[in-house]
Amino acid sequence: MTIISILDLIGTFVFAISGIRMAAKKDLDIFGAAVIGFATAIGGGTVRDILIGSESITWIGDMTYPIVILSAIPFTYVIRNRLDDINKPLFLFDTIGIALFTISGMEKALAFGLNPFMAGIMGMTSAVVGGIIRDILCREVPLIFRKEIYATACLMGALIFYLGIYFEIATNLNYVITTGVVIGIRVAAIKLDLSLPKMKV
Image (tube, rainbow, N blue to C red; front, side, top):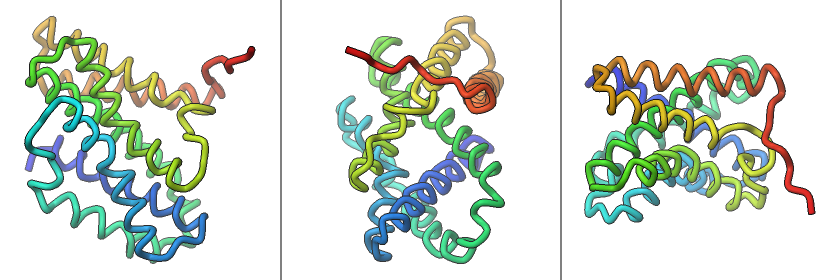
């Protein structure tokens, strides 16, 4: 396995944890937690694959993803009293996860012949739709619509990644630069309490 695929699985694992944590806050049982965990971790990639007309949905053809997601359930339960202590590492891997999901989503969309703009939208879809599904299933207004700079970071990452392709930057270096940009935007948004202007009518 490459370092990118390993980080992708870690991102999937962390996404699943965020879904399971939300399910726990809503007093769902273990089955409900598993459903929310799955929806959070693979929802974006599944929607992307459907939209671009892919006959192969990534997680269905690779059992590694379901195993990683299911393993997040006992992991979250065992460390439930220490989750606050590892919020920073979880935030980091969550941010790496959205960057890698943006990259992989954009690569797949480009391979299917989409133009760069729509490929960037598909990259963002891969990264954020799982969280939207999680929040809707748990009767919450999706977080990315009301608070954090999240989808915007993905779109900026998609732009940087495409510029890397356009200027023929080495693939691995492009991955690193794109991930660094997404992390930088997310960290700056949290540290400086940045958010998009609220819609007022």
